[in-house]
Length: 467
Image (tube, rainbow, N blue to C red; front, side, top):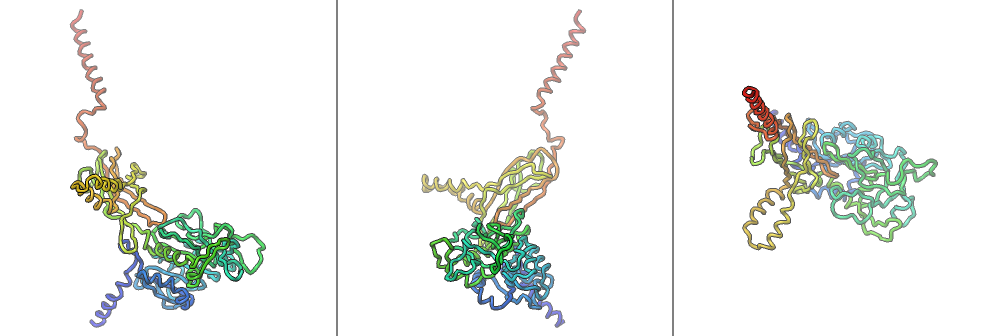
């Protein structure tokens, strides 16, 4: 009995931690496992870690080769995200390996990988599985003789000042990044046909990847803007991955460094590394750009309840509410490119959902004309319950085809999590007693039949009673 009580007590204490994983209702990950090559990285990269902790994340620091580390316990994930600051590790400790990390991402969890000039084959292989290829030359680093960071010593121009950012407020935030980002490490390429991988920070057209300690005997394999310095991946299950070719990118030294890009007279008192990585980590950990859809409804025009079946040519209405997570709360998501399909093998109806933002322009104009107007109350109620709740709606007629249809919303937009909504509904034809008694389109045929009957009657009378 005592053993049973102790087991129940242990499970009661541990299960809340083990089951706390990614959820659409709570998109902000909280428990993060950080694997390090050396525990000294905790202090040398402390500013980045403190920025995560200040936003409510719980960081668990472990050495990458610790024999006790594990991502799962009792079949449940103990962490919501993983940070790999161990570029030189050849083999992880415990039960973590390549397959475990890939399963972790496939389960919807997030991942940050920081490589370096001493990146091992294991780290390179993880990057390849995420759609990124590092330079095959293990001694190669990114060199740029025109966009390097100016320093007191001439150096080999491997410390790059890059400002070629992705054009996306969702991924990097709405505040403009003024200063360049300092980067020192290895470059990688992404497959242009892979829409899941995005280059967030690219090298300049004059950059190339080579060994700075030896002369070039052959043209470098990576050159120009094809070199990606930092990339992100959003998987089809909405898991997010950040891949960087520089561990120094996250360091306190680069966070606090003054920076001047070669060829530019302007000297910035601080690099943009901190702003860049803070905003980027918000996106990676779903503090921004995460959508959810609720209250998917459809019904006949003039009714409120969802029917079990529609009839051909019925007039119906479809509505859905879409919200975006903004770090602390859900806020209405407003866009003009959300579409719904009425689908059976192929879409029979394709309609763009409306939020009817015109109401927002009507209210100020009415206030200007009628400072006290009770007619404003319906408008305000409409705004509060529809526009401000991110409600999308449309109306259309059921096509003149019967079968099993689906309401489908497939929404994919750069930087946002994808939405895939589907509701199945059958459509029946008219019953025998639901057709009109006289069809207007058949009036010419009715007239032809009766005129034929009248003509035959007149012909018979004339034929029988005339000489």
